[in-house]
Structures are given as structure tokens and as C-alpha cells.
Image 1: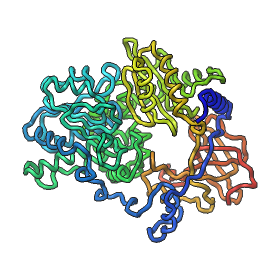
Image 2 (image 1 turned 90 degrees about the vertical axis):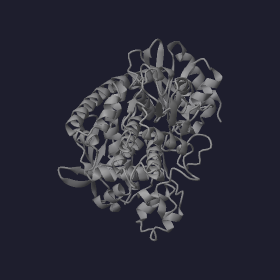
Image 3 (image 1 turned 90 degrees about the horizontal axis):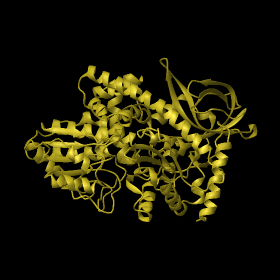
Image 4 (image 1 turned 180 degrees about the horizontal axis):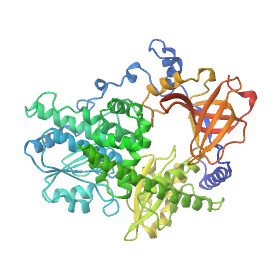
Length: 603
């Protein structure tokens, strides 16, 4: 571990290098992925895989053909020796609540995972016969995150049972307030627990101590799905429901959308959940709300991919929680009326346009704040704040800074009464939530509350403590970060001969998904000559490339103010199917670029 001062100098140097790089050039280190499971390459023929797919799977630690099977029957069971701790008592409590028609209030969250989890549990319990259901989503600006004592005061007066989804594992005080009110409480969550668990009647969370469930990266909506299935099972066993009824196939689109939106690792179990949702969407069986959202965004259901969920649909759902009330998103997801769904989808689309406009302004200001920092600064993490920023958008701004400068980043905005809400994004090598726990251990008075994951976290503090937090956090980073963590590394799948680049390959890669976090989409290396280039609206580029051997390819480069002068470039690219005007063509999506030399081109 380098000294704090040495790390600071290295960070400042890296920051200056990234500032000075041409807009189209990539300054990161590129590294070919290791074949974690090389035996799968050797067994490619027995697994009926072509060599390219075998190589991709081997680099993603796929060791057995069973890991490529994405049928429902391959899902891990929620109960049993390797099931979810706490699922049985939680399911029994809710099954009894359904039988007695007790008033159950679902406490959700204001992001897409929380919205889909809320809609799923509400719909599933309704299908099981519950008629006394309510739901509430915390107002992020008034009550903050999760089941807080303030939120308990605003629960419907008739509430008898509280169920959290995508939150609650750190709600020690909120659960105590609910119990003091005489309520039963079930916690379902997937976030990291604190040192003390809340005193709920049941807790279902794969990350809680002692839980044997192997898939720790399950999303909040996945945990809610497992709970709903367990409730149905108990009602069936008691004779309250007919065997096999109700059918939960209609819930798959919610599970897939929330899982992809929360950027959890696509381990085998999560890939099954996402694939089942994609199959339903591609077959034209999306629920009215998601179908309306797809129509509003111009998405062809048959062409839906995990990327569609994460980059097209989820931002529109999230826009409700960022700018107004996530209740809009939940109403859309629960709507059975196509007309109402279309109107709600248009509202969310308008909100998303507003969000993009606000984000563009805030990101420009944040970039200027960082560019105004002296190069000799020793801050390892970036902390930015403006008094007129919108608290619902600071997470996106933090992500933009992290992408540009490869530094862990927090962005802050005021939320009233002298408090700031901060949202952070991390880099590989730094567990962001744990770094905040270290800050609390050093200076307990600074943070009012915090929570999150390795890659993203949130916190609240008083404005007068911002400078103290910056200093303490950077002291923690000096101990947690290594010199190599400050240099961004892009992992790719090695060279791909241009003779193998065709539309059929792009189709095979698309069908081999779903790809995403923890199971990254194929990214290849190649060297090309730029034959034509033209700018597109939004700072994008359309290019025609030549491999030097007479083969030409269409390419797209998103969000790049400039391109390398060329004419030869090295590129990391994703072969994809470009569907436009009723035709399909091969397109190379360029992820990173460098200047290249003709004599090293790929044949």
C-alpha cells in the first residue's frame, strides 16, 4: 500500500491525464480477460458451443452446461437447506394475513427495483385473495430512505401488517416504532445489514448473517418474488387455493425489469429471472403498463434485451422517484387499463425528459467544479455540491464523474432543514458502503444515516459537516485504495479476426445473453481505418471502418465529443444487430478508442 501522500499525488496525476486526453481517446488500461474456466473451451464441441461462445463463457467462469440453462426449473428453491433464511415465518405470517383479510401495507422504495418489488408483491397477494392491501413509498425529500419512524407515523391508520420491499434491513428505529404501534413487521431486502438487525417478526434477506441462500446478489424484486411464491405455496397446502393457482407467469416482466435496473450481478439465478421476463416481453405478453412504456419509447417488443430494460425502460420508471412520486411508476406497473397505462407512460416519458435536462445542466456544472480543482490536490475521492442542485439527480451526476475521472465520487444536494443528501458511485477495488462505515467509526457525529452497496451508496449529513466528511472520507480512502485502483482497466475478450465479423455472429451473441453486470456483454479488440465519419445529434458519431483487407463495417460511437485523428484506430467494440427500417445489419458499437498503426492490424 502506497502512502497517503503518494496516493494523492498519483490521483492528481491521473486526474490531470484524464483532463488532458482528447475527448475521443481512451486513457484507461486495456486487459484481455483471463479464461477463468479454460476447460469449457476444451469441451466446446461436447457442449454444442461454437468456439467464440465457448471462449466468452470460459472468461465468465461458466464451468458446466447446466449454467447455460435458463429455464424456470433451474431456479434455486427459496426454501430448504440452501433456501432464504426467514422465508418460512414471513410466508406463514402473510398467508395468515390473507386468510383473515388483515390490512397489509407494503413499504416500497423510490427506485425501479423498489417500484417493481412493490407492484409484484401487491399483485401477487391480490391474486392470492388479499383484499385489504395498501402500499406507500417514502418521500425521499421528507422521510428519506426506508421504514423510518417518520414514515411509520404516515402509515394508513388501519394498517395491521407492514412488509418492506427493497429496504428495511437497517431500519432498527423504524421497526421499533412500528412494533410500538402494535404492528407486525416483515422485512424483505437485499442490502447489507448493519451491526444490529431490526426486531421484526421475520426478515428475508440473502445478505443477513447465517442465510444459506447462495445468490447474495439477488435484487429486491427477486426476494419479493420468492416470498410471494412461498405465500402461495402455504395457501395451496392449506386448501385455500387450488393447486397451481394463481399462475405467477404474469409477474416475470416485473422481476426482469427490477433485477436489471438495480444492476445486480447476473449470476446464474439472476440470469434465469431476467431471461424468463425477456421471453414474456418478446412474445408480446407484457403487462399494460410496461407495454405502454415500450410503445412510448419506440421499443419493438420482439427486440427487447436486458439493455432495453436497463437503459430505456428503467430510467423512465426512475424518473418518477427522482423528480416527483414513485407512486406514478407503481400505478403504471399495476394498471390493467391500456388507456390509463398510456397516459401514465406519457407522463413518465415527460418526466424523464425533464430529468435529462436537469442532469445535463448539473453534470456540466459538476465537471467544471472538478476541472477547477488544482492538479496538486490530494483528494482521492471527489465530493461536489451546489446549493441549487436537485437531490433526485445527484446519483446520476456522481456516476458521470466516476465514468470520466475514474474516482469514487459523491454528489450532494440540499433537502431542507440544513441537510444535504449525497449519492455516491465507486470504482473497482473500493466497497463504497463499507468506506462510509469506516467514516462513522472515526467520526460518528458527521453522518445522520447511510446505506448502500459496494458500487453505490447514499448518505445524509448537515451542510456544515460536508468539509469534515470530505476530509474523513479521503483519509479512509487512503487506507482502502491501492495505487492500481486509481488506474481504470477495461477488460475485453481479446482480438476477433474481422473475417469472423458478420451479422450471424451478432445474432448469436445477442441470443447468448442476457448480458449485464457480472456477466458482461462481449467486448472485442480490433484495429481499423476510419473511412468516413459524421456527427449525430447528442454528441454521437456514425463511422465506416475498413480492416485493411477490403472488409468494411458500420460503427457507432456514443457520447464522444471528438475522435482520434486516425486514420488507423484501435477499438474495443461490441458486435450488435442494428435494426432500422425493417432491415437488420451488423453494427460495431465502439466502447473505447486509441490511435492505431496500419502494420499491426487484425486480419
